Image (cartoon, rainbow, N blue to C red; front, side, top):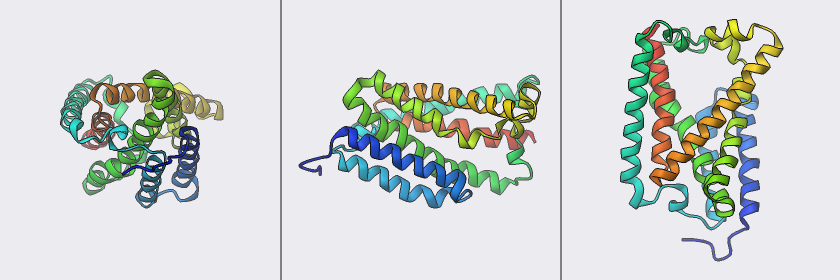
Length: 235
């Protein structure tokens, strides 16, 4: 069911951006470590904005008719990432890329929780619904696919400013490149923002080609969760 008089798309876009700023600050400043508790109201808020703007399941990439195609795309993406990680783990030159001090001391149960609960619910569900669902769908009304992908991906990059502040120290392989100075940390953070913005473009293209949110969600889950698992097995 849709509202008879939905709010203007520009208002819905603004409300979504404000909501995401608040969620980002909550996750990384006000209440870090409580991602799953923050995700539930954030997802409900995003769905409320979509309904408030007169949208529906199809605009979010969750239309019944496209779920099968989206699932096939998702499985294909997971297979590609798994093969790529296997190759990278076998090669001595790329194996150190999986080292991350944030995962030091984690046991098998911790990794399983991250891969099967924290990542799919706290990261993939929230970010895909926000950036390839609501934001992409609203922006596409006004600017088409290219404009929507650019807008959504730019915000996706900015979304990663706070969680990437200590990237240079968290990833031992990056330390020789950026050192321990604030300038190095800033440069690493800027690189992470640009990288995730570029990744956002790829995820938006998957969303367009499959017409389903499941495709980018599958790739997103595979990159994050299989990365945790591979790093744990190599450690």
